[in-house]
Length: 239
Image (cartoon, rainbow, N blue to C red; front, side, top):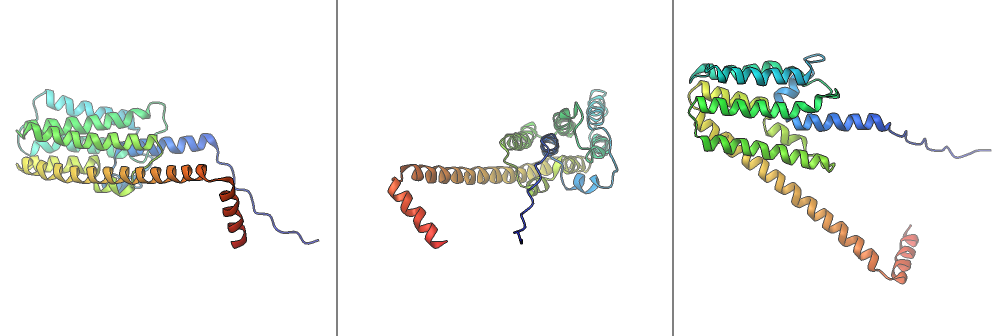
């Protein structure tokens, strides 16, 4: 007797493996790595433990600032290099350690503190530093809020947003060359337009899709039994 071959059932994903995958994806999104970090991630081996390395980077920049070593000039590139040297090697890690959830807030703190320390040492406008921190902070909040609802920002946003590493390099380079204020102005304007337009567009698109789905569901509920039977019969005849 010839029997029809039965399709193989799709394997059920392991719940623990799926949880670990989602946790890794979320923490990597919260890190806000840019093109440089992503390009180096595959070339750095297993990488450094993220929490100790990021904490040391933050404390080192704080120590430089408190000691008064940050003066106007090329020395302002030093805190940026410290953060990059210590934190970039953490990019390859899977962030599944017990305390690895601390990496994103530590990294954001290191980024913001370095921005502010360099800006104040270079006598940049304080309001401009505040706006830049606010723009990057909004991007971080938007990313966290979306991923908690399983709505993932597109990958190109993280690349176009330059990532924490390129943002710091641009700021440090501008400060070392004595042109920090115009660099901050251009960087802030660019990031504001990018993050605001992408975020608003994505949420409007999501609202429209949700509204359409709700309207379709309401229409199905309001349909009479006769209409539903007629529609089902018509679809069966077409098939």
